[in-house]
Image (tube, rainbow, N blue to C red; front, top):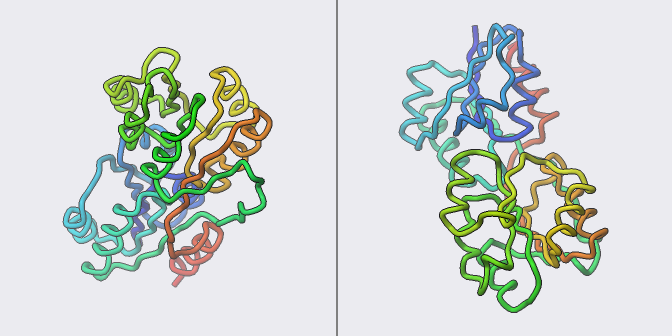
Length: 256
């Protein structure tokens, strides 16, 4: 039986694993954290298993060879550029077929004057340093340290992070706690985004362009309804194919 390794961390990775459930192919899903494992529903599957833990390029290459992987699908987050680089390089060195699954891009250029596009979290912080008003941070806990450069950040900023022990502990360590720490699992509806912005009297929302499955449209709508300005961190350029095309290619590969 052919073996496929899916590097997951997104809705697309979970949906691909679900599509392959109980089909004539051996599937290993690699996730970085226990939280990622919890998001995978594979208990009733006869052919899908989950591997937890981060791997560098050498470890990925070793895993491909020892597990005799025939195909790798990289469905990691659009902003996980280093992971994608490592996976692609490992596949090239091991001679393993590789497919990059990307989120479909949408045109956000018509979303109004209250949308500011920046290239990175540090650039967003620079912008906010010259403003006043509360900020809802929805860019995750990994780069939360950058926001501590904002004067009075403990009073001004509200961090919305995943409800995992690692995320919460890191946020508290940086000084985000009490009402200033929102630990919830997204994506969120426009109503929830609006409610958070209004509840904490936020003038700004900072988010990454996570695409449709990341709830980006709902963030824009919620901010518009709450009268908040949105700072959007542009998605890095990423070559690949969307989920529907990946499924077609996997079907052809499985039957070849």
